Image (cartoon, rainbow, N blue to C red):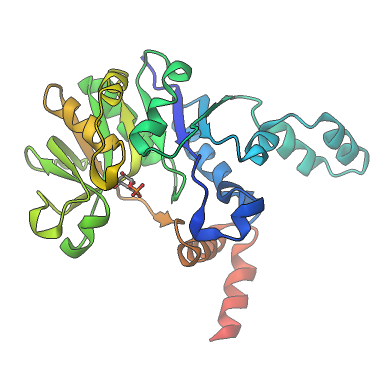
Length: 287
Ligand code: G1P
């Protein structure tokens, strides 16, 4: 069975980006010439996914506008000879499908993922947190493979200094990390104090989950920060089923703060074949 659906939780109000986010959803802010959200969607598509489930808020109608077909605009661009841009517009949602579901109140990541239940159905699915932008699709593709071969859920991981773990979900490894970066997981805890953390391996915003997680989400009680935590639902899975982590070896840009967003835009811009050389030359003039 293939992993076909990717859930992208995007209902947050983007408080750190106010006042911009009064008018524009953070997910649509540009990195180079693409909305950050499109880069996350492209990562999912590159891992073989063809159904994007966006968990949005009714207060963010611009997200829907982004996915709405725009035949008149496409036609007028074609008429002006701007066929590359026209083609980019046409490609949005052409070879893949988007479902938009709503999270009406901010009750935590577990709750947000739970809102996608009907759209996902009874198959393993990916979750991509759009505050993180990855260098390519290879981590997600590997995680899909591990989920299919083990029959259990999989989280993306990164090793960080101990004093940073309390901002994240942390795993309790059930054995060594193998040559492919895969590690069995026997426990998970959300935002533990550094001294109580079971390891220095944090969960980054990539997950491939078996559909039984929706029952665990439905049974959740408020956890860390009073929110319905996805990590707590994953712990319930790990206690009864195979559960693995995959250590990421690819670039990861955290766009959750204005500084992180700017730094990500620069790093991603430097890698862009068209903009990279000019950007590099420009940055060199500043130092
Ligand atoms: C969420 C998850 C956490 C994970 C993190 C990755 O936390 O709850 O387990 O480590 O994303 O970015 P948040 O950043 O929403 O507080």
